[in-house]
Length: 575
Image 1: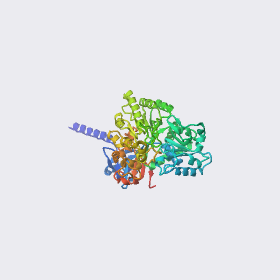
Image 2 (image 1 turned 45 degrees about the vertical axis):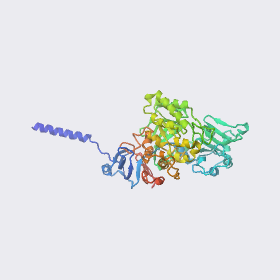
Image 3 (image 1 turned 60 degrees about the horizontal axis):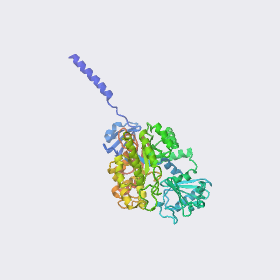
């Protein structure tokens, strides 16, 4: 009997020892967030009262009572005081260095007329030396309040601009980035001043054109790839200006609640800059970078190296960006039928479709996602065709390809279901509808607009997610404006009543997902971010009001109160 009691006691002690060693030890949180509305974007637990994080990872999501044990005297407490929190927002398609340089150069995004541009350049010329370049971006002739009396093929001519800047070369990029406007001095530097004397009546380059007037003189407008004629004469950026632009872009992201950024096409030099910023501890926004498809040598180099995903998830390089047509505003989008307001013109194929298929095959073979810019319906169809061909040739490599079409702005109705069928992700910037729809109907006509433009809800109903964003600096990086456009289908002035093609509106839940978990999915990162879930990265955006329930006409009043990145407060509006 004594032996049995001894054995029982011994077994009990062993079991207690094993249990105590195997029981999970509760982590004390470095930060505890509570006191407001928390939307997790996690289907298993859509809302929470509290979130606990340890360093840069989420360790608890749930009720405030259950969160109490995670608190100790070193835990930083964040009382939302009734404010709203979501996962950190993801800019699903933008140009990071373009955002930074837009802060450094002449910002023309708020100009309302040609005269505004002329005045802005005239003021800048007063502050610089003769011969120095004036570089700017953001004008859009279709958004002006009034148009100049003289227009050629839908664009202004350079004469007034040249009159205020006779000694300084000027180049002003269109808001879309797919066209540019040069003054006489810039064209002289580029060797174009003698065109009219040679009797040239048209000047086309592969994938673009220099627009000429009736006398064969350049008007100053360079469309699509013709911009390289001017670009190659613009002085190179400096390492110092690159760092300054990078830091300005980081601040802009933080101020707007952006914790991750899909950078749509970067060259070798920018990759080196990003690597340096990461090593120096300055990468305070997660960047998902796409290699520029213009540099085939760069692509081949990376095919050999393979994708780069650093353990801190600050800089990821595993995709390729191809620019396959132009923009609608510059009439560069590649269409199946001619432009309604330029009957002899179909837009531009800015990259051979053979190269698209070649890149798709190389991407599948080497583990790289392919993301192709396509705005016009023909460009979208041609790219879907090339993707489909590659998937059929390498089916075993295409099981989880997540290839994307960037913009997918204007689709033929027959091609809409192909996105889901081929599992191709549309990365669509809702703010483009808000900005472009009032004049896009002039380019495409009512039938094409209603059947195939900005088809968000139709695409979502096929089961394919949408990645949202702003295409900054084409549009301001403000995610609230794009969220508003997503759910209202209105301009930022609140017109028209009911919205354009209202049946295509996103719900607020869909719009939030397109900026969080669906955007993360579009970068193979849904397991580490995009929702407030245990084990994921501690990236959050906090707002002054509940953008999920506030009246529609109040959405644009939403402000970013705080941005938390990697478990650290990086922006606070109160500061």
